[in-house]
Image (cartoon, rainbow, N blue to C red; front, side, top):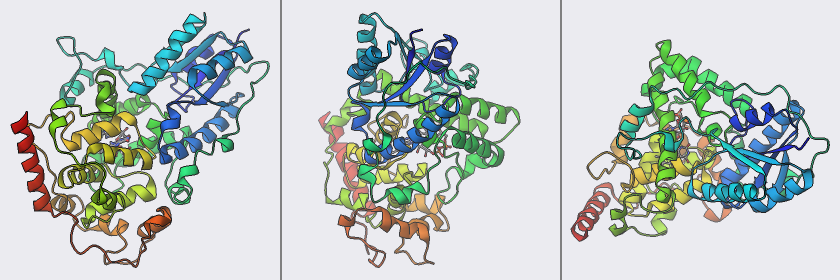
Length: 471
Ligand SMILES: Cc1cc2nc3c(=O)[nH]c(=O)nc-3n(C[C@H](O)[C@H](O)[C@H](O)COP(=O)(O)OP(=O)(O)OC[C@H]3O[C@@H](n4cnc5c(N)ncnc54)[C@H](O)[C@@H]3O)c2cc1C
């Protein structure tokens, strides 16, 4: 019986996996493969390193259901064709992805394999509602989040699918690369030990995280999610981006919590839908990840990379909450959502630096990097993206810090130079950063911000007015 190649991408899970479920239903041998292909080769240091951990955990999960993960490196189409020739497979299946480079790869693969006379099928395993299924009254796509939410909030994404107890094996397994030979952690060599203490890898870890969040945190989520020093959110972005848990599993858990009257449940559902919205935009406006979503922003005098942006990357702007956020990301591979908004606003407005500079840095540092959510978040903060607000939003990081970190706990947790008892998290920053940064806990904290808040705000407003005048 000809085997089925199941091409794994951002879906490192067995449960609620439509491509895998379909393959299993055919009653034929299945060969799960992951490709280090042209898209994955372009990922940043932290996402690649975290991918390696995810693949290791998923390989073990596949072994537990009598299957095996085959790893291959090379362009997707050539590599899949090679595997077809080696294994005699006549079918290739996968779960769909929506950003421009992912779609270009997948379209090429699907057309070529079908041209070869094979069956090539794709499924929805990454979002709740696929981008083309959510339409405005006039049949277009949504550019603003709230009407998007209203459209989908009462829709049913379908029941979750059970994990297979076993996956039928082929008569012979194809050769596989050794994960270690891919050296996915190469660019992370110094920071990896530090970040490793903060990751939650694999499907069972993701399920446990969701369970704990629903049991203990969702009730207080509405308020706690914005407080910088609280651990008040689900932490699931890391798992969702690698598909270690499905958005649909999170959706149903949130719906059950809402039915039980848990206070923050609807807000949680809305956040999960923000993720869908990012993929909706990435599909309908593929330039979301590469250029200004609103083309009129092409006239804004963004600066390219510069010395102040470098100080921002190193958590040395002199704005405590901004520096705390940047250092949190360096140590944990994550950053509180509120801090993401503040550091992005400071870089793009006060430092007048192009959002792409920050977006690329996040893409290199985040273990929950998601190409669509990251680009949407950056463009939203910069002003060039899908924000319904009709004004030029410039956050004041100091008043935001006072509001969302009133006791300064977040700032002291991450910035070692600030007065207060020594703490391990802040010091871990110095173990995570490259030696070439030549920074140490004995350094004095900047006595003044690299760009003052009112000065930077005025400069951004003037540039914005100028942009309007030239439109
Ligand atoms: C500049 C900037 C960059 C960002 N980059 C990323 C990124 O690369 N990857 C990423 O997953 N999120 C990104 N976000 C969104 C958000 O900050 C994270 O999803 C959130 O902090 C993850 O924490 P959590 O899992 O505890 O979220 P929770 O509050 O528990 O939310 C549950 C889930 O909803 C989704 N979600 C929540 N907020 C958003 C949002 N604003 N946009 C899209 N999805 C959301 C995530 O999948 C998250 O896991 C970015 C936001 C900004 C402002």
